[in-house]
Length: 601
Image 1 (cartoon, rainbow, N blue to C red):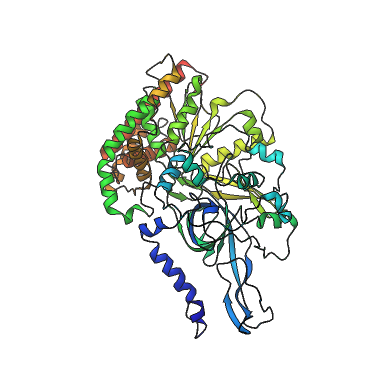
Image 2 (cartoon, rainbow, N blue to C red):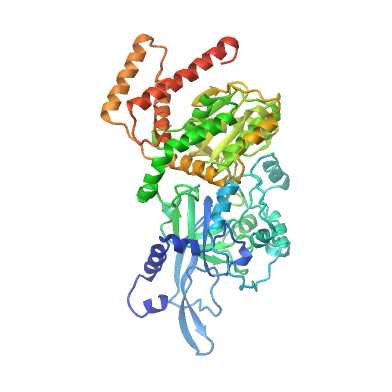
């Protein structure tokens, strides 16, 4: 296409090439045929082939210049030939740098990492849908270890001790795959490459994360992408060892960060990128409005699936059906709009009264982890609060954004375990971390640290706080766990209740239910709006102090989530009454507990 474009006027070959891939990749079968960097090790993928990558934009580098069109001399024909420099890192030999036909172009580079906290079941289901790469390809390129690259020595721009601190907390992010030796041999990188990567700071937001990071080269419309966007990128894979960095003026530290070895951080030249509304592989990759048949069949089953999930959560929460109701509402909540600085739709849940025996909160997180696509468990121990880096920070020496644990994809479930908090003093870092968590909960934003100033980045994170008493962090709703059973052996009880991966069909129903309910549209008719407003006026008549504007807002959120959990896309008067009843039960429980323990709400 490039060669034919040279014969006439501008034929728009670039647009035609992108449109060709975009049209063909709309077909599900075509997308399945494209190997994924998430599932297939780099050494199994052919260089300069079409691949895809499900990722989060962790950082955006400065634009770089490259030779879009250049001229070479064919040694056999002694003739000059125009070449295309697009979608590649390195030009061919014999470039005529003095040619007037040389065209300099600009492209943007994104540093992309796998979706932080993406759970094992998502990866397993995604990998099952892929085509196994041809074993006839024998990689001819010699894999080098990081230590062998003299130019790239000491890639880690942070002190090793700091990186260990960031990853030192005991979390459940590290997942283990027990699918047999054959699968491990296929999906794991060679030991020398793994060892090399261990010395390379891949800048993952969460400790214990595994997977490839990638430098994505963007050639057009890069202003349409934002930091922390989740994308599925289709592009040309480049793992050329002679990849050079086109930053003409940069420090050695910046050179190391922006030009890591391509054998460890491959380059992906974007042809087409699709923003992902979710990363649940059980749902269609596009929005629900484009899949009416799937949506109608799912909606017809939502009430029955909800009843099954409610029964499951009731057992998990020691027989507390009311807490199970609120847990379902929390898991389907999402920020659907913002009014000035106020995020609408968030529903942070404080589950207080949690037992501390038998690691109950950790087992509860494991159960939630089985149901949501992405999650992170953060024990709020004094050590973690004082030592972990939660907020991303700009490193001006290396010219990159150093990741933090709160740099998460939208709709990630963040489980804060406050039962791990012990007596002691928070230092400056600890106070800053707790403040960051409070801002995240209240305003759904994280203030990234740019040294001389802070920059707000909006987010959409589902936060649940497990605590013994009332949390020291703010929340939208507090429900005290009231156990109806008192098992003699908590660990055995939870093991019996915990739904194991073998029950995949039931788990998949729950996974689809939670993701679909979160994406449903919602509306309130004028008639119901008038009824709700009159109801609020009546409640204020009896006792003006009994229902505040904040209480009314929470009621509206509960009513919205309750409707969606039942598969209803509009509020009915029956659902409004049910929402009020739920809130009345919760409030009376909290008042009852307050009477018994006057010093603790």
